[in-house]
Image (cartoon, rainbow, N blue to C red; front, side):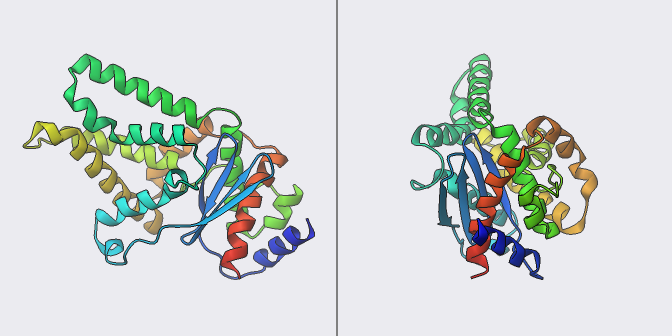
Length: 255
């Protein structure tokens, strides 16, 4: 406990800290920086790993850089030593490739099976304590940005549970982009679902970069509103789970 408190006090007094992101799980919280990730479980365990580093040339290519960054952010889930169980990794993979596979089916069956995949994905992601841990993830990251880690650990500070960089905001941006892309004619019908998916994600990531770097926060308002549904006010125990993951990442970043 003393070591963790000392680390937070040190981080609170540091002029520069890496930008953190994360995701909530039913049984814990993942926190990531550009170089490291950590998963703090509700059972007290902590798992650690390194983030995939794409070639620098891909980070400079419009559209491609967004897809590479998105794929890298999912690394802690899809790696064999990551935080998702094999069955869940298959479900997540199915959700990603479903648009291409559903192209073979007649309209009604495509819609029905698409809805089943989405429902299964939501039930998997949002089960258990996920909503409270989602709020805790945001609070822990905000505490890092506000340099109030020690106070948040003690419970004397309660940073916001809403985040401008939340995946909910990304999803809110991706929906209208996907609807627009779906109306764009493509020459080969077989590839249409796959092309729409890829181009929509790539375009949304470019918009996402501009929103984050240029302060176009008005575009985030729908996602911030949705976070009232995708998060719940975390208890101190929930916040401390997320803070343990933050501590793991910061310890390696500050080493």
